[in-house]
Image (cartoon, rainbow, N blue to C red; front, side):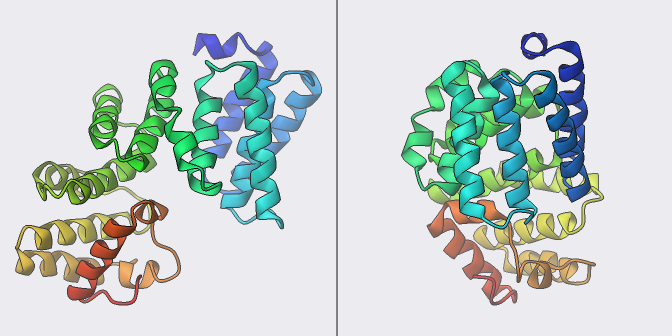
Length: 274
């Protein structure tokens, strides 16, 4: 994005691009490389307020990978640094989206995050930022906005990140449950297409099959639901084992959906996840 590029010297901009690739490897090694490049950038541009946001992402990364001893302090400092950037440039979508994510997921301030929606929709123009707004609007129960934003990203960038594809699928399920429409037809088609893609991530196909099992059960097709569950049971990372310690965080956003989802899985033979 040329507008972002203008905020940094060429060397710092290049380091930030390399850092983003490292960060998105979703590994501790990638995070350490991100930190190394950030330290170089801090030396090159010590007064660049946009680097405060980059440091905030580093701190949140350390929280996610269990690399910080004081989680609350890391989150508090990440939020402070993020607001530095937001206050300096309210139209910088990456910072405002990060602020909203910290508010809703870690500070218990969902309403404050929801109050940012109108502004974020206006200033978020790239796939990454639009996806973050899509997640925010879902959490705020503005489901039509959320699904519309997810669909926009999918249409513009069909090969966008796998985390986006997973979040889109969960949004279908949560919105259909919460609206009590129980129309899962579009969700089913989408999830089936993702299953057919056969991504390499461990446990991803097991998750798709479990979601399809839930949908079939809600549609009254218990035999079909059991077939999906039994199929994933025979795979390398069945959810009845892999989700015992950690299931997708997104499920926790909606307590009623969470109870219903695990109740259905329990009826299908996957017990003890809630």
